[in-house]
Image 1 (spheres, rainbow, N blue to C red):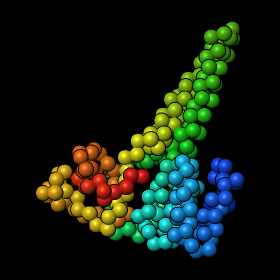
Image 2: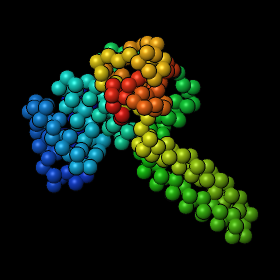
Image 3: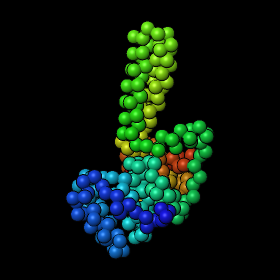
Image 4: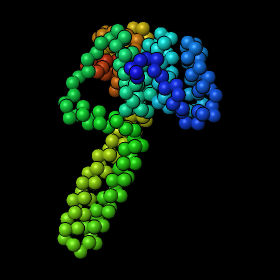
Length: 248
């Protein structure tokens, strides 16, 4: 029942939106098929400084229904940054990408790296930070048993208990850092020009390497003036004018 582009989270409220009629107004526009009005209303909420995975998701759906694929992808990606574990966002994003012109195969990751990334994305940075703090407290409890207990058995239990949860502290806090870093240092973007030529150097006279189309996701490696050095999922690298892309 969830696997539809229409399955927006209309009845899952944003923080404080229960008292904010603007979100309800935007949802009503969407329900009535008034997608341009819904887009305008959702963007008005964003302009107030309020953001949420649900808000970006709903906005992405409104753009999708209005035929604006690049904007839909952009907002799905922003929603996924805030809710990396959300299956509905992931499904709609994959659906939108399937309709883009560029079919780029990502460079394969080794299984363990892919599994760790998938596991880390099951929760937000705040969640992993809270888990890390909890594990740190348990580590201190284990250390207390090891230091103050007179029983050899309890000392051993405290030692191994503390080591296990210290490892959990390191892992969960590294997960929290990675998730937070994705939100702060946004180095991915979406192509917004119908077609754009990627150059071998940051210059109009540079050799044309390949062409990208609207809706394609790229990674930004560096900036030189109005040019961005980019990398594709398949490992191809080149330069592109910054006005052709929008940062996720």
